Image (cartoon, rainbow, N blue to C red; front, side, top):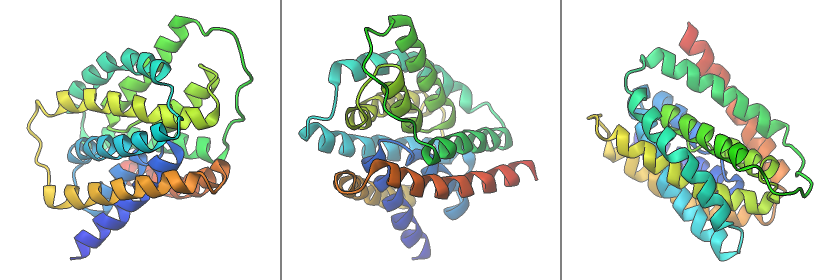
Length: 248
């Protein structure tokens, strides 16, 4: 019963982050699965992708209804990350769990700092070089595949600064990018058998999906910067705990 309650609570927080911010939820999902629900790092990153895909799709539909998704821009950005995500996903199962946890913790610290110190929106600019956009998309895909995170905390700033999207459109469009990259990474991971506890993953995912709807509505009422600071503070504490645990 306690496990079920923890799964529901953690899922709700992940959904709120993804729905409200377009990112940040996946970097909370993996440590929750490891430290609260007893998953191994490999199983947690694979389960995290499943959860993120379902939750991102829910958030994507909600943002699309409000006209906050740039389909062509997001599709091209995501396409550049498909192959890197698939390759990194296949390689991730060969990495020792301690190294994977440490790498994830470092990435989570970076994500937390970005959320605590959100960037201002980029000023309108001319056409973005295709190579620059493709490089950003490929890098995001590699991170998604390797560490099992959707990468929204990196996608949103990239869409704002590299492609000059307004913040509201960047949040919605990032969910499209997350969905595509996470699916590519998951396909290669599932080729390697990994024991997954569906009794935990199912309620976690259900709560995350419901949380994503609430997060999207919350984003319309509360400032994005305020939400980022709240989730950033939580994530920083979790990331530092993981880092200490990995090197101890």
